[in-house]
Length: 619
Ligand SMILES: Cc1ncc(C[n+]2csc(CCOP(=O)(O)OP(=O)(O)O)c2C)c(N)n1
Ligand SMILES: CC(=O)[C@@H](O)[C@H](O)COP(=O)(O)O
Ligand SMILES: [Mg+2]
Image (cartoon, rainbow, N blue to C red; front, side):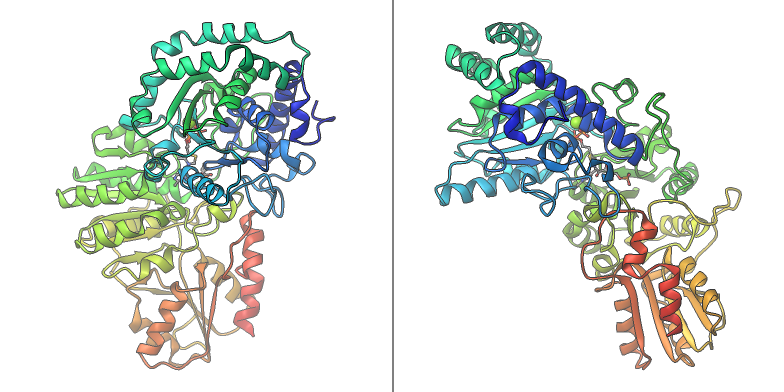
């Protein structure tokens, strides 16, 4: 079916039987691609039938389809012109792992972060109405992403919208188990009486459909004409989905999210409804691939796997792993230490902590703003919260850091994981702004370790610190990790010379993973260079800056962060303040969004690879 498929208009001509065959082909293609390239497997496998039904009923791209997060959209990519290039998924210059506006007219928005789709959809629908256009707007949000506060702000502003559908794609999972009372409410809806009768209703609706072999559109039209939407309306009427109804939504569901004809019938009806509709569909994460169905969390995002056995490609020892172990160790000696995550327990290395100290562990769901303010509350209440959030997701909690933690002078420990270039996830996920946005927060101490041993030292430092402390560390392989070595003391704001002498002719100030990179580059030049591990971006070691620039003819700063406003900018400000006049080159991520691909390749694009750094130091 995939071989003869061309674009979404074809779907309207296919029979149900053909659509089911197509679903099978798409699953195989997804499995083939992700087993080789890595990617978000389980969510995409679960959304295949839903995607087919959406494109079969909607007139995309005129009708607007918006995916939340976008990690479930591989079938959408395959169906909308990217089949031929799907083998390049997540690779350098290849097909993006998320919907991306530049990539296709079918990708309404570029996404990667959770809970944005409904706000955007409300905006698009209001713009449509003002301009008297008539297309439908449909967003697809997972049950895990529904916990994000932005969703509620959007629901609160969707009143009276017509041709406006939110599909709640409920697979009973976030990356791990969804948490909180909202997840409970969704579970309750899922298990309601209606669900028990779901099978019967499905059978009844299908009984009304003509025999296999007829085009789906005819089948759906006939179904709707015959019943006048009665069944679906009945479903809506009988459902006690008070929460959504009170917000002005008509609730349909829950429907079997793997039943193409049922989904198509419901969508056909919902997309032209004169009020906002919430269509609740039930899907299975990992559908169609047994290892992923059994362990959806492990198959959420993978680096590649053996198709036959489901054996996952193993990662190397990571900073995240070292962080998780060291925190566990420190927590054994201090009962006040607790850990907070926003739906990323595994990703931030906190799973072992959660198991060992369940009462001191808090997963707040996808709710980064809440995670920070809640942690500030824990700190105000006398505990020592360590709040681990990916750099890119911490961006949305900026005001909480300023207003709810810094201004209160609360001792909060922010563990900023995935700081730097993350690789295949690309521009939505690179953590290349945190040095810029954190270093300007008054009173905040900002540090980055040069290797895994120093990560341990800085964790110890952070836990004994009575101020707001942010520790950034990258994704991927941890440098110089010595399991036996205990964490050592670190002095606040002190850097160190790691290569050469203070009176060298070229001074290189680096931070985090760029320290090792700079040492390699310095060695390559054979010049008289001094490399400093700054360790702290705030406060900076100004004394060491004075010493190392006394004789220097040139200063280079190196950071895995935007060149704008980051570590290099902090050094430039210090030079001005100290009245030091030295030519200064800021090496960092250029002022644009960096693409996807292997980190080494991206380093080259940013001029942060050893060869380019060596040339810059030498020039
Ligand atoms: C703001 C933000 N926080 C965290 C994440 C990481 N993340 C990506 S998908 C996901 C789970 C989403 O669950 P759900 O929406 O139910 O989709 P499913 O994975 O179940 O298909 C999480 C936590 C993110 N992308 N954005
Ligand atoms: C879609 C999403 O936001 C996460 O699944 C993210 O891709 C995880 O990244 P890591 O692989 O770095 O944990
Ligand atoms: Mg889910």
